[in-house]
Length: 114
Figure 1 (spheres, one colour):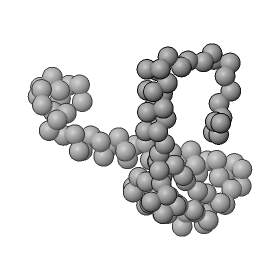
Figure 2: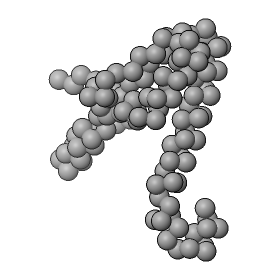
Figure 3: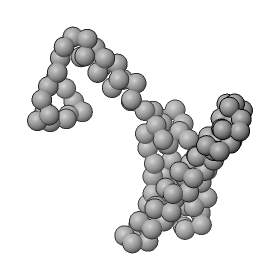
């Protein structure tokens, strides 16, 4: 890619969709390889995904395909339940930052703050 960018300064812009698809393909391939290994090593037959990553349609399709191939019981939530709370965490961090609300590294993380 670097060589192509030197030859064509618009290479990334002109090939962005293909580059993103290639990266997505590679990431899913790595994830599935690790998942297959883990299920074999630990005799796992129940596989699920959750969170924002579970909204990725290619990952959902691939997990279904692998589930059928390896005879896993796969659980994939409905798309509307595939949320990522990074935005909420980010806005909370922003307001804490502008209000000078900092804590030490000894602070224990909790999903439920009073």
